Image 1 (cartoon, rainbow, N blue to C red):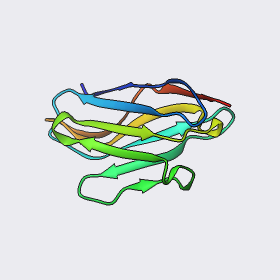
Image 2: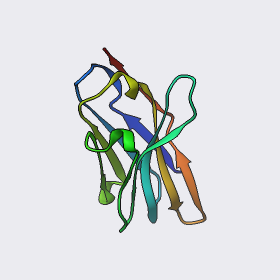
Image 3: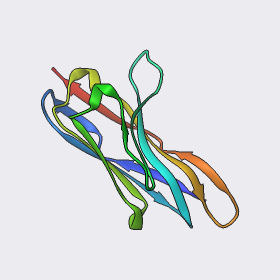
Image 4: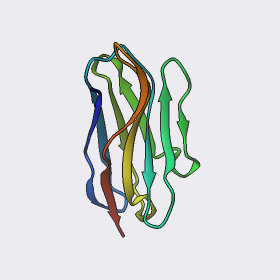
Length: 120
């Protein structure tokens, strides 16, 4: 059973920083891509950043230059360093792992979500 466990959300003032972590646990052979999505109040979930294995990173235009995604493949963990946070970054942030292959199947997985609140 593969699970994604997120940590690092919280309350921060505008201009501050937070670092999110997401660790995939279970018997995992490979993960195609890992990334972060967010859902702000009253809005649909949107891509924040995505890091494929051996590929180029994708960022939402709204976070380019402020957020950095990184990945530790040995630990099956993805990070999101968020700097210069703005009130409009307030959302529930979800970790995503694409095409996670374990002994019997390959599937996509989502974390439970972590709240990030930026006060003005």
